[in-house]
Image 1 (cartoon, rainbow, N blue to C red):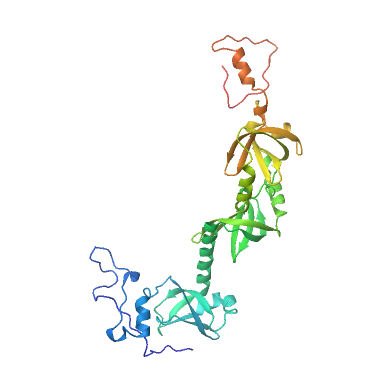
Image 2: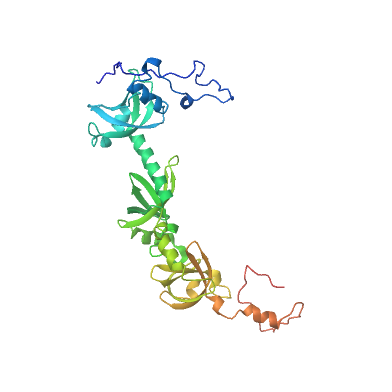
Length: 349
């Protein structure tokens, strides 16, 4: 095993004052923590190369910090990393076994990142974890991808009734069905979960352009969205439309809550069930069919999404009723009249 020896050029790192102990208080009343301790070197070493280096450096690394240094030795059960001027880092035991696949790819002199898991090793080494460091770096990269709105090309590994499972940098993430592009969204009538799963399974093995929208390392949660990759393109297409425009389109999907209408290649609008007809709509399938050409009116444009209304292009029966009937006007019913249906959203007296 590589033994750690005291080098004549090693620098003793001290605190500014003897009273600056961990847990004591600063003059302003705050507690002194590990990273708050100012660094100081002895007078005889101040003007040396090492002394100048130490004075310019940040405080000594502590447990939980990510550090980087060149690999200086690898044996059957340990990896040694130079962390000058603070000492030598070691990856061994459980951490060595956990990072075997990573260690196989490591070369001497190559700089590598590791995470400090203990700095109280019996022989003075700083104990490190490559696996934890890699995980931390990957989560950091995920956060940067969110900030930069980076688009990633990732294969679909599995599907469940809620969406798709995708693996990125060794971390399994989730792409909810609600975050799929219209072309990939499972447009299943009646919301049958088994049929939705069948549609999602068709995407397994394909590669999708997605962006990361949530990265939570504590929860191990990585959430993708296919919509993010097309936002700019869709915003450009949507910018051609305005609220109140009457448009033509083709019905591409019918679901419980409404119908999807293709306005142009790559752009769809949604007609909510309440905007299909002025009367009660229990089942959208009774009003439209897949492939049917329709006219609709744009009633809302929000976040790149277009909401449409079919009924807005039809005469409003309630306007005519308001002209025909006045408040407190007595209404008589013929004996042959019969109730066809009751609306839970209205009360008649």
